[in-house]
Image 1 (cartoon, one colour):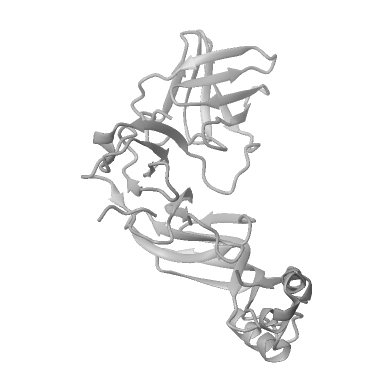
Image 2 (cartoon, one colour):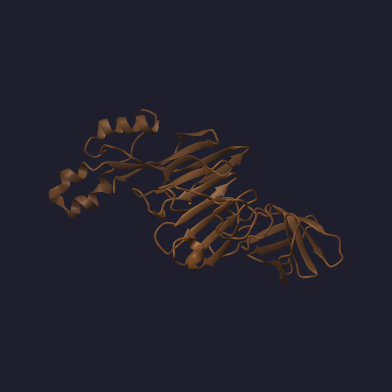
Length: 324
């Protein structure tokens, strides 16, 4: 992350809308109490509505005291979170609920990207500000076109997508390279670079600004589940040993099992295939290559609250490769 010397955000704080990837709105399916269904794609200042018969309507965003409101004068959507009221003309509104067909590990957010002039970035360079709006907070990322964000911020949910030194809480963290997402009050930032084949990440409590944990994930999270204040994460964790399973199979295996909390009889992977390409490329250095520390990816379940975190290894495949 660079430090100097991880949607038109006028939507109300309770609007929880979905964007699956930068610059692309998600199609969210709603099922209504009258048996009909709607598909809505929310963007910065517009809701694109598709009715069950295929009819499409564009609904501009309207000023709402709370929640969200889109209307083109005939068709209207009002709501909060995963529930909305849909009305046509003077007909009584019908309640529609998210059918759950939008999938993703992180909470849905309203996204905006704003180009900033030199005077607005604080770096005498033009930049781009990305904002993710959640019900109770916003996350901001300042991009100057270099590796890693020039600034990452936790901010109030209200207000436009712009930097506000008075209200924005800047994240000063070497692990945090880019925004990643959020679940409940927990904000995830990922590294600017991978590490030993995995991706470093860090989690902050947006309420206090406290750094709660950091780790390295291999691939994606398989589950992120929030119950009350407790977040359960399931993922493959990347662990770098200080020894080589190839050079010291018995002693290194015992050390790794102890460090990872694995059962004493749990088999560890055969690392030979992962080391072999490097050995084939330089046979004369085979002994040195075999001594390279081993990296293990293994499945875990982690519990996280504002008070701390713990994790345990769970059933699943273990893989091995040499440290990079």
